[in-house]
Picture (cartoon, rainbow, N blue to C red):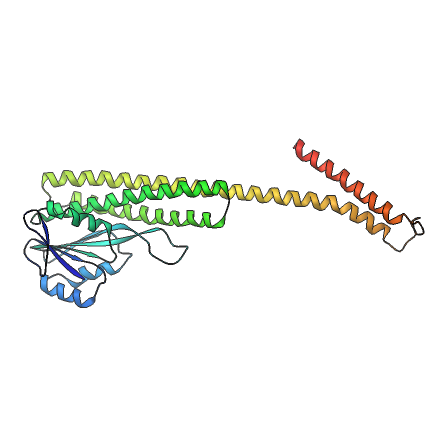
Length: 313
């Protein structure tokens, strides 16, 4: 679906066809017919539009016939029904700069574009470089917000794990870990893209725009550092809980081994007196009770010794 917007007297107005200095936003559902129509209408290479369909597309920029393409990764919630998938994934946003338009293509509903739409009335569509910088700013803000949400979820799940070790809590931590892997990879890719834009004349930035870009690079580095810190903390947490689980398992096996040893001696006594060999108690009416009491006494003695040994350790 294609939507056209224009800024008229600091008001965002949706229009029905592209005009000069308008913003063209392509949102799901994406149709090949619309791509073909938009490509012919705005003289955009069709590959620039269809690149958004590849969820693994890396951050980069390109230029063809004075039409500039910027691909940048942005976070979004994962609506997959698979329980083992990450809470958040990263998807590419396509930003295309033509002579008279700025075009954005999203393969998923994207919070960054919604935020940009809410502030579009304050933008100057003729200054396309500034609009690109503002879109990137919203993307970095999204990363920061999702990272804070991930950290809060991690703290809650860790507390649940302290109270009760359950597999579903470990699965939730694994989903958070997957989300952080996506974020770290995307932020590194975005960092390289911003660095290339900074040292080249791809966008031909003014001094003011160049300073804003440098600020965005600092913010992106901060988000990347946060993602790395949370990843390291989560890895340490997973290792700690794995050690705790292994230690608890060893304690259980130790108790079972002690119980087996304690019970083996009474079983041995009962087995000896149960053999078809003379033992002196064949004709005694108290033979059963003697063997039972002897086995019980031996079991109690061994149990007390094992208990004391455990305390001494």
